[in-house]
Image (cartoon, rainbow, N blue to C red; front, top):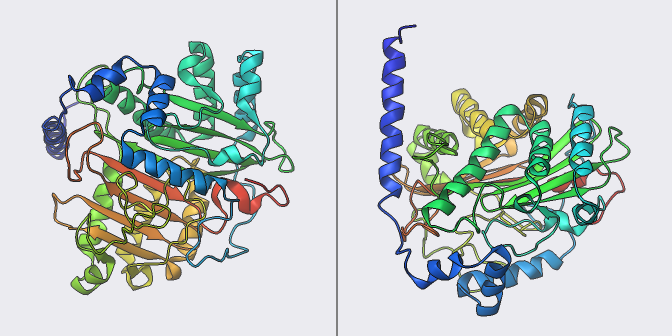
Length: 438
């Protein structure tokens, strides 16, 4: 079939954009013969974590992990805008999730584990370990089973459970994050630290189709963290963390893989569509590392740190108070509200389509209480941060400086995204009906 002219133009634009992204990140490589990389190359993931803890290296991240430990010790209440959990926002409902298929996939995955691994993977439904996820490649809390340590058929069975739980496009997004992590491990010659199976898996409760017996699973590792809770045919996927450095694969068997571009492009389109007055209100800081941001050295409360950078709802921030900032969505035009729904659709992509539509509808119902804020510039080439926040959802998008790449300033090829469900919605807490803890 002959390509139509517009199809050819679109393909050329995508190719040019991909080549530009490839060229951008390949300008920023560290010296891989430095001790940082040669030492790590000799270590497995546990030796790497022990070296980090014993040597407090890098010190900025070690200090942050100490702050995280304090936050992890707190009982769960949930992200709020003012310190008070708002009740009655979420309800138990039949979302049409194919829970029977998901339970079969879970039971199959468990059946392939050794007796020892069955003990390691299983936690009570209200276990605190729901909140143990974190983004760094350092395995801070080695809970559950690690995909790279089980036989390949077992790893595939666990991934089959992940696939059955997510939408098809959401599963491809998760795979892209895992594969880019693998690609990064190859780029910096640390495949034992970062690969497609560098993820821990935990199972909470007993897989069941009954709403009276909730259960769920957690997958966490570098640049991918998914907390998935089931209550009969209802699913909560929150919190989630999805990131990439770089955000494309430009060589090898997965060449052409890219991730998190739509979220960035849609956010920028929305910001650029606002009036100058709205842009001024939305832009809460002009600089990505603005000196006006709170940076007292208290990593529990500071507005910026080297790991989270502009994110306020990252790992262990389960109880953070995040005041509303920016421009109210109630001032948007109809087209701008549609664009915002397209943004949220990308952040909710892990959800099966029926559940995703229900969550989008819930978000839309609260547009009069929704805020959009921005940090940084909003020219076509500018890196940036944005947040959408309402009583029922918080999503964050951030361009970061380099960790395994050498860019000292944020670039558009290193991206972090977060989804939270505030007011006790994370981990399905708001609909547990007496099954509390965490």
